[in-house]
Amino acid sequence: LDKWLIIPDIQSTNIDKLKMAVIKGEDKWDEPILKRFPMSEDEALADMNSFFGDGFAKYERERSRADIESSTSKLSAHLRIGTLSPNEFYHKIESSNLEYNERKTISRRLVWRDLAYYHLASFPDMRDKSIRLHYDDTEWCSPEEEEKRFNGWKKGQTGYPLVDAGMRELWHSGWMTQSVRMVVASFLCEHLRVNWVRGAEYFHYTLV
Image (cartoon, rainbow, N blue to C red; front, top):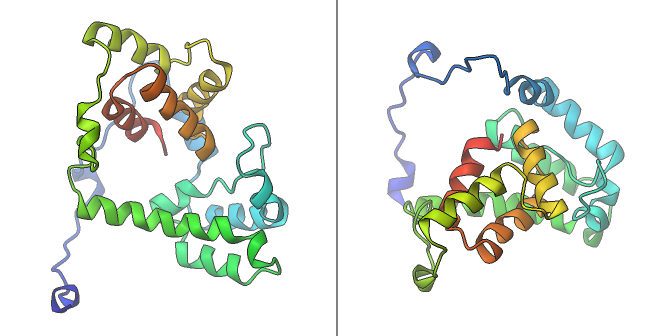
């Protein structure tokens, strides 16, 4: 227990020394993403309040719908960047007038989010090595075939409408709903037989 009580010596670095990527060229692909996700606390609170005014009461029954704009909160970017506190979001959920069975899943998903961070801390190699070792025996497609299939998946050119729509939305907006993420990820691994590590890397590159 004592090791968790140690306060680390935290130092800061100026943002201009972080060697962050600069978007160059004529294709300003970052502009629609920045427009859709302005990262500020005011925007985060406005988005949260908008969700509670429109989609929260329907979330339990519509959260898996890919065809309804308000089916999810779209707050994952704010939670990831830190413009919205998961504590604030959780207590707003719990203090609502909805019964437990009408709000249980969204609270659980906040807990699963922290569980994912715990997994990363416990299994630091899990970004490129399965934590379930029997998956190491999975037979993937050949390297030549993998490149062709992976590129088709990235560009939304698989011929499967839901998969393609999700991947195109991801590239153009930096976001896709959780249910569609599970669909496209499963499609990449189970149907195209492309190693999951490549999909994880692409998600890391594109998802806000």
